[in-house]
Length: 338
Ligand SMILES: O=C(O)CCC(=O)N[C@@H](CCC(=O)O)C(=O)O
Ligand SMILES: [Zn+2]
Image (cartoon, rainbow, N blue to C red; front, side, top):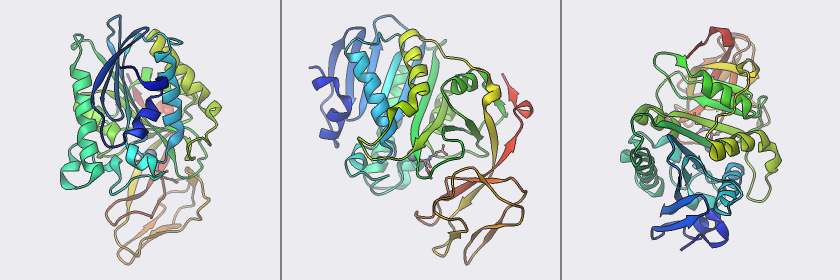
């Protein structure tokens, strides 16, 4: 059975809870719909590259969902000849249908087994997505020389001084991959945040459990379905097309990247927690030393050094969750690359 109109997104949204697995062929390989929002495409020629593209882990972040769906349609219609292994995941179809970030719990806080502490749709979905990634990386003959990649594509709630940026998962030895950074630079990414601690995000899961090159990729600002200007993703789309079609990681000088290290996670520690910034303040806005960025009945957070900036500020979440990241610019030359 083929995918109707080669539209994996439509199939997923029409079957948000479950779908019976099926297999089909397309011009350059074989496809497997393994579950709702879980599509594995295997090229005819064996490849050492196994790429996971996840989108819609937050249901209202529709731009990357539309971008990846368009790429998948191109492959299924034979416009792009697939040369690498590909797993496409539409993370939270139920929330996507509701145009919501999530239903019960933020899915992108439930990986690395954190789903075990929760109930509801997102908890089951995190477990299912982990399983899909695990199966995908193990279902290949090229286990020893396999190159595992995972780009988890998002859009941000606010505008950003650096419109497109990635979160580089916490790397214990602080040695960062130059080829991946050069790929991201070639893909139109402006900035890189170096995480300061392990998390329960999807990208950190793939990095720490599967040793994949994995990143949370922020491609702009949230928009409803049908209101995304996909031309804003042109550089990223071109890089993905080259990777999918030729197995080549586009490369540009890493010198164009603005690099930030994460200093602190701001955690909402009480219902009284508030941030001292207006709703239109952009990600990466810098502040003066000693400015009180956050306050609650339990704590205060003051800017440590002039130039420190805030990313992902958000207090519309439960107590105990991340309300923002404080980041500090660092020189690219200070990074250890391999
Ligand atoms: O704009 C926002 O506040 C959130 C955008 C978003 O969903 N970001 C990810 C980042 C994940 C990471 O830190 O790797 C998230 O908050 O889950
Ligand atoms: Zn997101």
